[in-house]
Amino acid sequence: MISVQEDIRIYLKLGRTDFRKSVNGLSVMVETTMKLNPFSGNLFVFCNKSKNRLKILYYDKNGFCLWYKRLEEDKFRWPKLNEEQIEINHEELTWLLRGLDFRSAHHERNYTSVA
Image 1 (cartoon, rainbow, N blue to C red):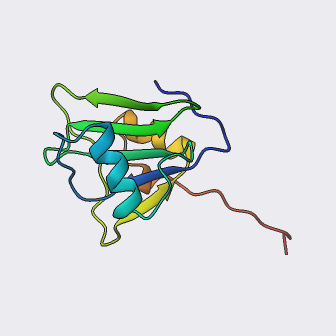
Image 2 (cartoon, rainbow, N blue to C red; image 1 turned 90 degrees about the vertical axis):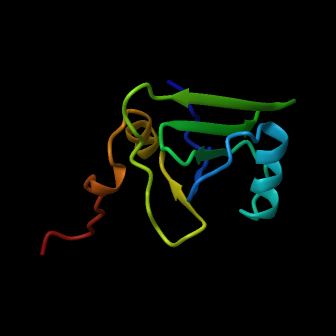
């Protein structure tokens, strides 16, 4: 499992991504399509057409890292939304990598009063 610091943001590039792209192609996609900084240290998550492979791109102090996961029999619960990208939290990334649908989880509620 990939470990991530709490101050790191996680972005999913929705839709399908051509998995022939590697570090150069994905970093250009982050900058041009997603309009984000690929050198930020944030995680950028991509999924293939079959939804059985994920790539996570991030910049780590002096170079890019590319993390790859391939499922042998199952599929990732990749969101089908109209947006170009969404931001998720660390717990939702863990759920996604384990094959769970993070969108069906209860969201944290913050209340200021019991009345």
